[in-house]
Length: 303
Image (cartoon, rainbow, N blue to C red; front, side):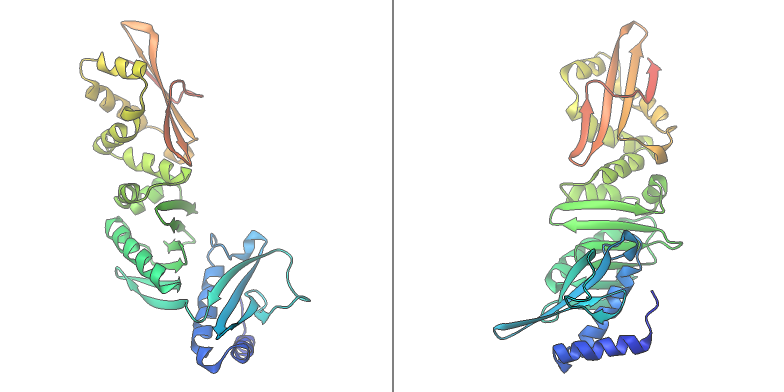
């Protein structure tokens, strides 16, 4: 986004006039940081979403609260006459919020938001970075959002709210993202409660990297959710762990980057081919579900 220095300085002067001279440095830092956020393809404020990005500066002076709405596209203060109809707003409180530029886990980072929440998310990100196979070039922590930049317009977006985490990939397929995040995927699985469907797909792709990780995935997510008939099928086998290793050999051949919302498995026994084992492993925003009958069979073999 091209913003002339003259327009930038004019906006800073206008905002200082609305608030106070003591706020000038924070206003400058905030505007610079918000411009960076608008340039991230997946960010809430990216104008490619067809919404006009707006930051609302606020500050309380005793019993009076002052505010100013600023267009991050036109770099001017908005009023009811020039207010864009379709807009996305974010609030920045000059008497509370901060903009920090520092290194987190050795990675350059810009942190924007409430300092208490940022401190908590910063600690979480430190542990995630420690588990990653490949660290990002830099990242922006924007309130509850983290945008990790891996170069060539590739991003991993994490939204962390309380015990929830939601993942979104930009110009990365699941295989690439799994190899970048590495052990950070099972780490996030263990420390966060609710996740979105893309996280669970990413978890499945990670688990299919080795027989050991797939065994972990099967026992954590599939085995406890089997119904009695499915469980009986496995118990009747001489060594069901050999079955899991055989199943893994088929899972490893799947095109992980074209995963649907369900993996359908059908296993027939030579001794009784009319009573196959059928399992549907479904990825949802509520977790991983195991179904009695898959919608579409993805993997089929005989034992």
